[in-house]
Image (cartoon, rainbow, N blue to C red; front, side):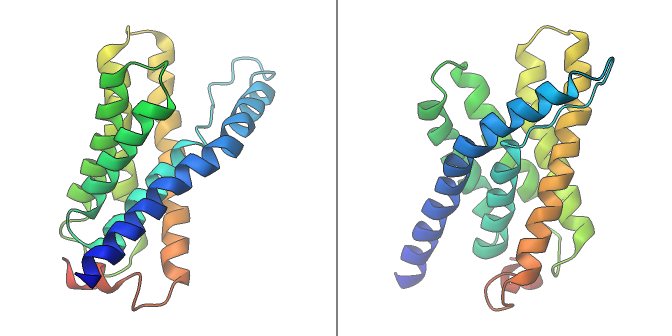
Length: 181
């Protein structure tokens, strides 16, 4: 029972972090992309608000073991429906659940705290996160630029998650990854 309550508390904190950071990173993202748009034909855009989603999903998998990323993705999806009421609900639900599924599937066979599995999980999670946008939107040229930019943000978020996990004590962060559970 004590382990379950710790897991629930951890999931609550990990779900709240992207929400809190979104209030800061949203305006920062718009400002950064506005500055980048001053460069003619610059296809680079950043999705800074996506990085905390990815980091919290990777941390949930690292702390809670198998299934942690999927549960975190589901919680992020439910939270996203309430915090982004102007976006279509199917896209919000699918993108965060597929983020969790991508991270979970990629880290199933992972043993230990290594950079390459975490980066590959962030790429697969980022691709899952972007997939509903491509399915439910018109095939514009901006959609083609969306995927590389989302994956760039996913790599940055995956690297930040790796740095966070590396700095935490072993008994907290890499325990579940080392056992492969």
